[in-house]
Image 1 (cartoon, chains in turn yellow, green):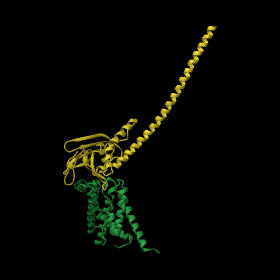
Image 2 (cartoon, one colour; image 1 turned 45 degrees about the vertical axis):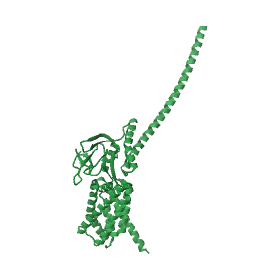
Image 3 (cartoon, chains in turn purple, orange; image 1 turned 120 degrees about the horizontal axis):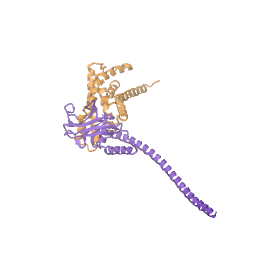
Image 4 (cartoon, chains in turn brown, orange; image 1 turned 90 degrees about the vertical axis):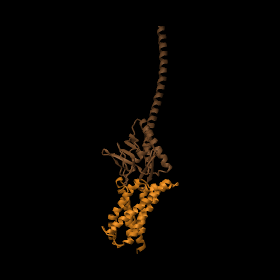
Length: 217
Length: 192
């Protein structure tokens, strides 16, 4: 009888101890749950802010591209912006990818023909919707384009690309690939609307008396 | 009682406003890439000066080119705007001078329409040279290397745009200007 009472007492004491530990762990668990919920809320808020910032970044890039397309090319503002635009565009795409989504871009192809047998393709390159042919060229070539801005024509006249400038008998011409063949652009690069799949080319060509290029890409 | 001077001033303001509105509207309509450098602006400045005098023509040219230099959908002209605006005075002077020379109505499809077309084409060429010079000044200030200025002014790549400008001005000068010069005074009940 006494043995049973003693066993009961010992069991009750052990149960109390383990119950106390259980309560302590449950309380700690609640605390962790609370912290996790707070972290989740913060993450959602941060993710929303990141998306919003990404949108703003996209808009800012668009405005910068528009500004670069209308600035006097000899101003420091143009020179700095044209060099920075390419890296800014690359980092925007990386940030968009890190967010788990692909940036809304157009796939474009650019061919550079330097007229001495040296050609370079920039295939499946990304361009922002709204860019024209000149801005696209500027971004893909990382700002290595020398041009004079003629505001009265709304056009940049390109005098050099990648340090290769036109000579007395040669000039840079821009071409569009349409209908299965190359055709010289009827207006300048600034008037070429870039869409998904657009393919343009720049060639350093001699020209005839009508200023028509005597070569093709 | 109406003061004739104020009535005349009101009429001048109305004419300038009407021409300016017409020019800006036509510029907008022709702002697409397929109409690169084709504008009714020069022709209408010429016509306004021909019919209403140099002051009206100059006012129309200055006002319309200033508006277009800053509100054009293809971009602001910026620092070069004074050259663009000043160039329009050429057309106003040409229109006033032509009215002194050919005071009688030129007549549609007469030889005067060819002269007017040629005059507008010459003014367009001078406008192109003057604005290219302005472009060079702005691009190469303050060093102003002469070779670069000359290259910018006479760059063969600008030929396409210049030809479109001069060709369209010649065509509008031959076909549109004489019609307006004949019709506007008739509509207003005036004789030149």
